Length: 264
Image 1 (spheres, one colour):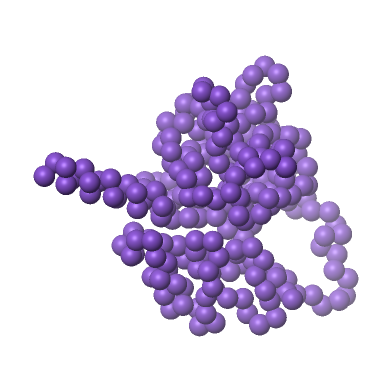
Image 2 (cartoon, rainbow, N blue to C red):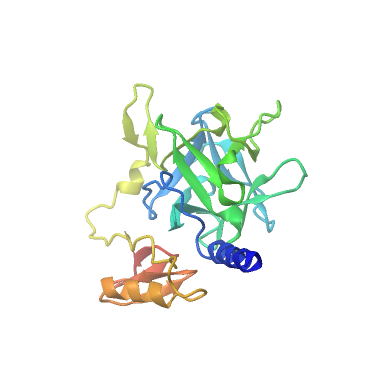
C-alpha cells in the first residue's frame, strides 16, 4: 500500500512538472501578456534594468545594465497556469524565456534558454505591497528569490539567493515606456515620432489574450481540452502556438509570436 501511494505521488509530480506547477494561493498577479515591461531593482534604481548579454550563446546571460529603450531590456510576462509565469525577452523571442544556469556549485545565475518546461522556467511574482515584487522560481519554492549579486565590483549579475528583506531582491515592474518623474508623476516616455502617424489611417496591432493552457483535470499529455475551451469562446477558431491554444486573428491580421495580431 505504501509503495502504491508513493507511485501515485510520483505520477502527480510528473504531471505537474510538465503542465504548469503546483497552485499556491496569493501569488498570482495581473500582468497584461501583450505588454512589454521593464524590471529594475530597488537597490540599483531605475538607471539599471534587467536585460540579456552574450546573445550568441545557447544560454544567454541575464544581468543589469544601463537602462535603454532597447529590446534586450523589454520583458513579456505570460501566464502559464496555477499562478506561474514565463518571462520572455523581446530580443530573443517567444521560444526562449528566463531560466537558471548553474555554472558554479554555490550559485544559479539568471539566463535565457529555450522553453523546455523545466522547473527553473516557472516563476512566481509576489507583490510586496510597497511597489516592489519578489521573483521566485518553482524549483526553489519561496525560499530563494532572484537577486542582484553584491560582489563589490560590477554589482549587476543576477543569482538565486535565500529570500530576505533585501533591496537587491525587490523588483519594480512597470510598462516599458512608462517613466516616473522625481515628483512622482507617471509619464509616457516614448519618443514623439513613435506616436506621430500623420494623417494616414493606420491599423493597430491587438492582443489575443494569454492563451488556453493545459489544466489539472485534462487528459495528461493532451491539449484537446484546451483547444475545446478556446473554440467554445472564439467563433473564428483557434490555433496552437507552443503549448497553448490561441484565438485566430481576424481577417486582415496575422499572428506575431504567441499573443499579438498584427495588420497584414
